[in-house]
Amino acid sequence: MAGFTTERLLLCPYTEADLDDLTSLCGNPLVWPLVLHDEVSPRSPKFRERLRLSMERAVFAAIIRLKSTGEFMGQAMVTVTDTKHFLEGSFAICLLPKFWNNGYGTEATHYMVDYSFRWFDLQRISLTVLSSNLRAIAVYQKIGFRIEGRKRRFWWMSGRWDDIFLMGILYEDMRPGAAFHDQSVTNVVKHL
Image 1: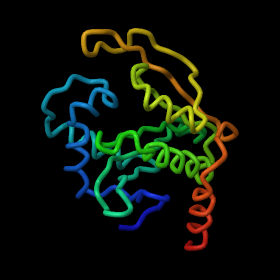
Image 2: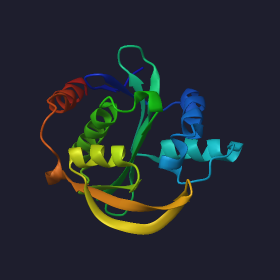
Image 3: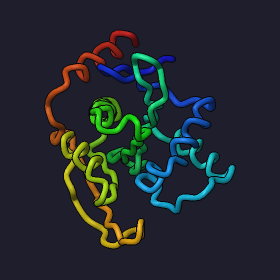
């Protein structure tokens, strides 16, 4: 299982064998509305194909596993949205609910954003998040993402409208900290 490691996580490359775990993750009724902005209903084979293609098209797609056990936790990806100039990336992450509120999302997000700035020479990374997803917003702000815009009444969920925040980060916005990032990137260079 080659990939990158952080203090507590393995960030492994996506393989076809991960598709069942990813489909299950996206079908979780607590996860689904927060990341897919879609109705909770059974998914068709076309959904699996779209999920597979999104992982394969990302410049950095990671299956997140618990380092101590190898257990599947979730996924994260960075895609390039400005393919002509390769200046902007888009970030997305989702974890199984049993791994929420333990700092795993912060750890994975910090590593992937830092790595993407260093190795893909991106100038900015953007994301969207529902305004009701306070846990995710806190993670993104801790890393250095800023709210850059708001789409009001973006999605109807649980009997009420929810807005969506547009968030972005520039390399110079990154919060200092977590020494494992510099060490991990240095170790990658040593192995090339």
